[in-house]
Image (tube, rainbow, N blue to C red; front, top):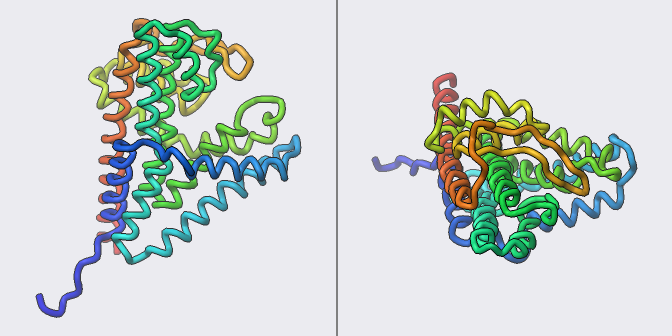
Length: 324
């Protein structure tokens, strides 16, 4: 009608268009090859660590607050700059999603290792494995590397994709970048090395909290998308709590059940040997072909996650309007 102002898309539409576009760009080109924002954050966080490091939890908590807090603040300032500008907001969301998710690169690295294993070239597979996970490749034979790749695809689907989308749906661009910052800090200092046992405690605990909802969403999506929902639910319920990580447990167990394979067991990581519990003990050993199956499951999980996040925002907006 004449005189009526044009309808401005709401924040849910901005998030939906922006997140879908960011995932599409990631699917087409993968991670930025140069000037990756996550790598820049890592260099800055390493500089903060050099300035603050003390063998004390309090100093580590300050490190976490400075790095994650400043990242969230920058994200909030950027989001505020495009407020009430839907196209700019969608573009910013798209750029943030592309910067923080890593699903395509995850799949490429996994398939590259799978190709080397299928060709019987264990040395090439060992050279590429550190691009995907921190395990000692020289201690692994072919089947053990295949299992490590499937486990890494499962865990990184939660860390590098689903968790970011969840917090993006909850808090927009600040949620996207803050989650990625927390996850990166955990990878940098959240392990139990002598230097980081105390200093990295806060980063590790914050990552556990931030990753909790994304891990459960990943497990639920894998259950729905994996073609074996009973097996996924059974493994999730029976074995997830056995895993030393509260978030990797549900994800790896549900992937194991969905794929019908057995995960877990002995591994060498960061110079030490760990004997982790077996997940989905009734499954068969991992084969090289399961790497591609895990990657395809990861992509289906990503699609379901986007739909769930957009749907959740739509429901929340409807409830808000109803209660207004």
